Length: 209
Ligand SMILES: C[S@@+](CC[C@H](N)C(=O)[O-])C[C@H]1O[C@@H](n2cnc3c(N)ncnc32)[C@H](O)[C@@H]1O
Image 1 (cartoon, rainbow, N blue to C red):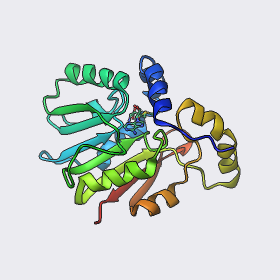
Image 2 (cartoon, rainbow, N blue to C red):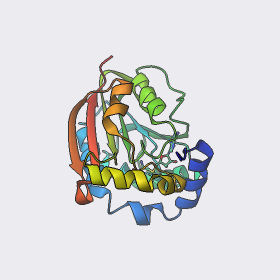
Image 3 (cartoon, helix red, strand yellow):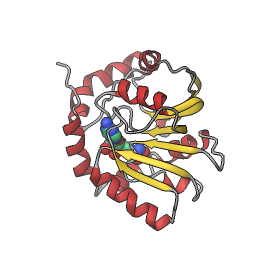
Image 4 (cartoon, rainbow, N blue to C red):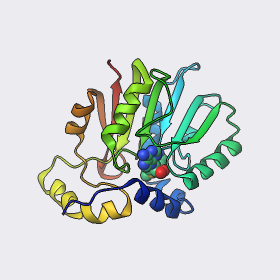
């Protein structure tokens, strides 16, 4: 049976994860984070969107004066990000509770957008990526860091088997990368395997539209 990830389920999951999220997700996923933010190739005037910013674990990786907007569905996760912005003294960071499947931003408002460990944690990844394409200007950069379904048969099969359990915990273990990117019209310029066992993929795209 296919178990569907729902928006309310995601909100409930991250309300519970928020107090412990950084203990679990900081060090294991740190190499991928550093590589993802570096791949944005940030310039001083860039307007940057971080989708599903969570507790803001990526914030220390940006230059302090970055023009960054971070959105997340979970108020509890965002509260942690607010504390981090204050601690790091980042005057040009704006944080908003917002559903990434229907963003309150105009077309081409950003030069660059990034989503780390988010795309398999959202109920509707196609809509999120389409929205990222809409709000990033033509020629802008979109960086995605995510675990996708393995292309190796045995691993892919195991990921299919554990998918119902993972979905109940708030993420999809078997999201296939190529069909997803094709569906939203994104062609990767670069794909790098990162983190423990090279189990996550860093995908850098130019927004051609
Ligand atoms: C695994 S966490 C990743 C957080 C952060 N990007 C990081 O690298 O640590 C996934 C985040 O995506 C958020 N999220 C899930 N669905 C969303 C949606 N539709 N719109 C915005 N944020 C969403 C969750 O609330 C959660 O904070």
